[in-house]
Image (cartoon, rainbow, N blue to C red; front, side, top):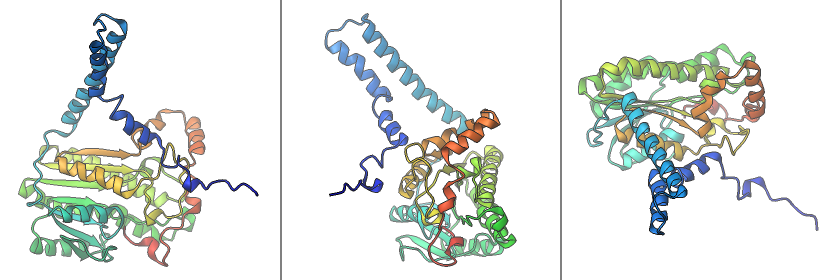
Length: 353
């Protein structure tokens, strides 16, 4: 009988990634509490405080503690005092919330009793969701955004949380893109952020509280073949967010959250093969949703980048261009879109997520 190798999809090691290992380390060997338990356990065994082993353990625990407090101080300096978030008073607007990541966030907040308005060209993928109102709107059309804003204000109240999540992907080389596709890409992926922010930010300022969440992408920092239009738009909204955060320093009650994830397992990027699942794992939307929701709930501004490589991708620019070219080839960032399929139904590749 011929041996049939086990499918990689069924491999026990498939979920293993550097992010998972780091998560385990953060609650064990890299946690200050665990660090201080080591010298205390040594002392409990009658080891003298002057013993080299216990001195090393104390030094390690002290280092972890110092790092922890420096991280707290760093966030305090960067993002100032958090605001109080009371979801009985919050009105949340989510663009592209009919499916994928946006729908997950909408459903969670709806179940928690918040008032949620979803802006999308489609109905909810789940049919309906508790506490979620759907407003048909092409966010790439400024007139439609202005019109639906009046309806939301009338029906639900003044929006205090804006989650700019809508996006489309064409997934073609530049020379295969039509001018209409390029125009559509920038209207949905970039200009919509200007339209919604300009529309809803004044109400947040008047109410004295607000949070603006920008769902960007690590592709906006790296670029990739067959994503010229998408990458350019994502780079644009990252720059927009950083500039807006600087402008809002004088209104600290308005918080900003920038989210730069890697590849998500949503229909938007169906068929794309991740180059290395250990160093660049495909993210589940529920994991990203947890991070976004936790950041909003904290009432603070934040910069979220996941998986781990997304936090360090800017350091790639430190290397000489030749080294950068080698690294791009090794990580396969420019080959991932060769298997791109997008949404399976005809015409759905350009639907909002």
